[in-house]
Amino acid sequence: MDFQADALDRVIKNAIQVVEDSKYQIFEILDQSRAELNSLTEELQKVIKDTSDTADKVDDLEGKFRLSRIRLTEVSRDFVKYTENDIRQAYERATQFQLELSVYREKEAYLRARRDELQLRVRNSMNAIERAETLGSQMSVVTEYLSGGEVGQATKMLESAKTRQMVGLKIILAQEEERKRISREIHDGPAQLMANMALRTEIVERMLSKKDYGRVQEEVADLKKQVRYSLEEIRKVIFNLRPMALDDLGLIPTLRKYTRDYEDKNRIRTVFETRGKEYRLSSAMEAAVFRLIQEALTNAAKHGDPTHVVVEIAYQTQLVKISIRDNGRGFNTEILEQKANQHVHFGLIGMRERVELLEGRMEIESAENQGTKIVIHIPTNVENGKGYEDGEHELGTN
Ligand SMILES: Nc1ncnc2c1ncn2[C@@H]1O[C@H](COP(=O)(O)OP(=O)(O)O)[C@@H](O)[C@H]1O
Ligand SMILES: [Mg+2]
Image (cartoon, helix red, strand yellow):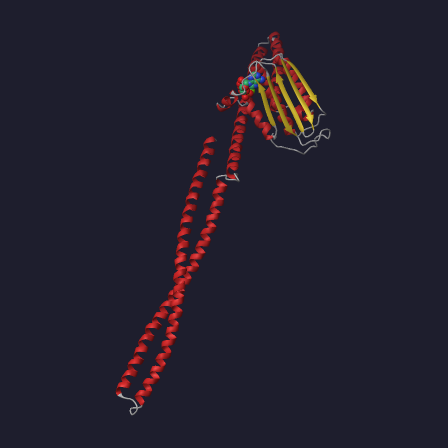
């Protein structure tokens, strides 16, 4: 799971790098485009001026050419008044203007085409710059978003994804553990007892065929004891799966019975106390609270070897506070993390996860030879004294 989160981290870092690089490139392109736009605009202005100058020149030449042709017509018509030289001069002037005119007309046509082309390029260049500017600022937003920046959303998203993943995985592992435990319990307890009983009924059968009634009676009496014992074992498994008393009687009576049994079984003085006015919690929440206390008490008996344990539940407004303390040998809470990483001890971690799923919090106070105290706060959204109404606050975790 860490591996995947790290991979995700790497992917995001790469993405940020790529976007940063692209942003840099876009800014470079923007600079170049702006410089090009400047020179294009300069050239365009010059071409516009040239075009209009040339057009003026063409107008001027057109006028001169017209006049020169009129003059030529006049001169060539009146042989009396004008000499041959006059005619030649008039002709040369007219052809000169004609030539100049065609040159300037061509120049004007070229300049107009060039002007149109430049205008188009300036427009395109301005559009490109505008798009690049938008892209650049969008990319800034993207990098800021990805790298956390002020907003820090990506990091937060990543972190919450990481924890969600971890919690999900641990829940699956815990469920697997639970199933393993239950199958072991049934296999070692009731299943073995029943196999044994099947064998013994066969023996009874054989004794019956031999008419050995005395021994049959003995065997049947023994079998009856075994059947009762098996029934008890099966009830224990069922109780561990989900104490039916929880639904029928509620949390407090179930815990009262559980702590009494615990005291008898482990020979540890066990006190169970409640404070405040009890109100019903959602069925999922009651089951969770029961499991929390069960796990804490199991740990005390298994690891702490105490002479005394105290379980306390306080019903407050919108909150239940649960504390379980023992006077056993205690432990160094710092080694918990290590043990968790070895994936062997799920009890306390599972407890913490259950509590977090209920949006509560859990504190463990313990030290060598100082006993252990676990305090859990769970928000209930129930005003004290009002009680839990069925159908509300269903968590659906059970
Ligand atoms: N009440 C307690 N007294 C002493 N040690 C405890 C107690 N509760 C937990 N521990 C220590 O914390 C460890 C982790 O507990 P837990 O997560 O329930 O795993 P497990 O019970 O499977 O060992 C235990 O192995 C034990 O060393
Ligand atoms: Mg445990």
